[in-house]
Image 1: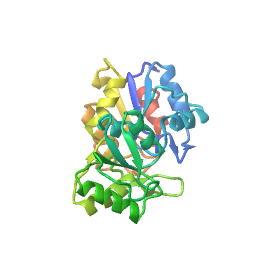
Image 2: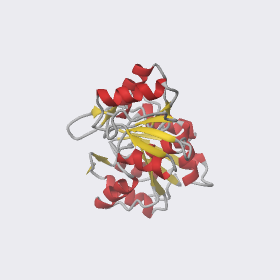
Image 3: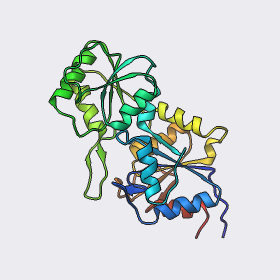
Image 4: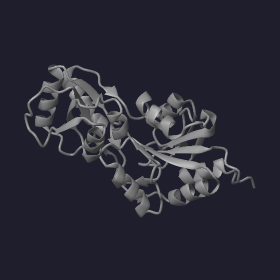
Length: 264
């Protein structure tokens, strides 16, 4: 049995791969531990912009996965294209608010400051349950006045144990439709997120990286953006591999780990 890993770094999506609404998928925690024990670095790459970085790290820790320094989110990707000192209308959750402020910009939260006076340099959008007609109106006003439209991600749905719910991409689509402007999207599968990942994994050749995820449109395309292999799991939003461009297919993260570790 060959237990030498065939990847130096595994980039691992969270929702639909490690957990569903923070409920661990069977075998996922052990898979991460096995990969790490074999010398593979596991980095969690999520399009969740709602939760803060600390919340993500703590949630992973609560299920037995240490993750300090190994999480990158679409909120971080969105903040990476925001200019320090700029004024940002944030239509998103705490994770997005925190990263915008961490980037040195002023975050004006749409659902907390109704009809906030402009001008704004950008409108940054992510998943949030407070989205309503007033938030849509404020975003429209800001974009029409010249603010750039930035989406943390374009995922239409978000997997939960009870089935999918609308994702940040659905909110972004409403704002794009109202404004007539196509947003700059920063999360997977787009280049700003790829740039963040490469910064976190300096010196690692792309052929030693595997991106594991449940969404070919997001995770699979992100693998191609990076130039690395794509491992599709069937534990989330994609029930079949038929017609999917994937290098590895497994029922879950545990099966991906078995493949990479040469476990028969």
